[in-house]
Amino acid sequence: RRQRCHYPSLSRIRIHPPPAASTMPPAVEPKEIKVVQLKCADREVGAKVGPLGLSPQKVGDTITKATVDWKHQRIIVKLIIQNRQIHTEVIPSASAVMIKALKAPPKHRKKQKTIRCSGNMTLDEIVNTA
Image 1 (cartoon, rainbow, N blue to C red):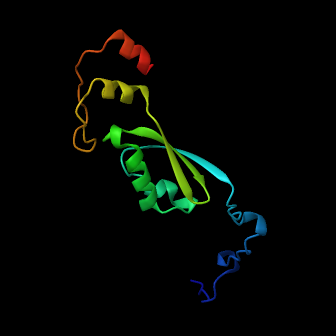
Image 2 (image 1 turned 180 degrees about the vertical axis):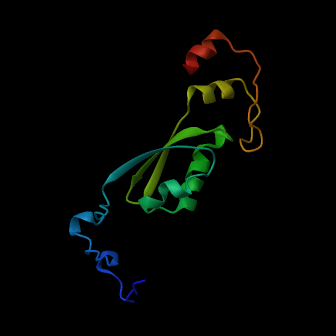
Image 3 (image 1 turned 90 degrees about the horizontal axis):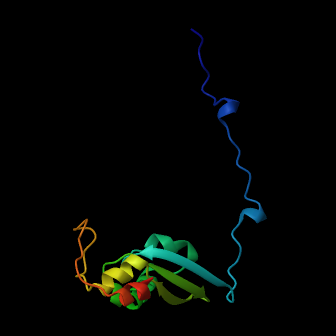
């Protein structure tokens, strides 16, 4: 049996070149406007807004204030970010508007999987939601 030497072989040595200037992230311009759309329920945004350099707690509080009417429903929230200031717009889906029109009780999505909503809606209400 042939004895091995204790020096690492050349195939195992890897040299990593320093990152080029083109691979570094660009500097953030204060006047740049970023628009992000998130589908979330309540405050679940921490990992989604982390790369934007914003505080997840601050974003969560802003979203909670904007979505008071849509408690425990997954809706689309549009975040407009400029100079580290956040403006929110709520874009509810058709199903969320229907559930709200039926005045269904709020469901906790982690405890209850499927809830049947029963109620009466007029044709005008259905047309308005569409």
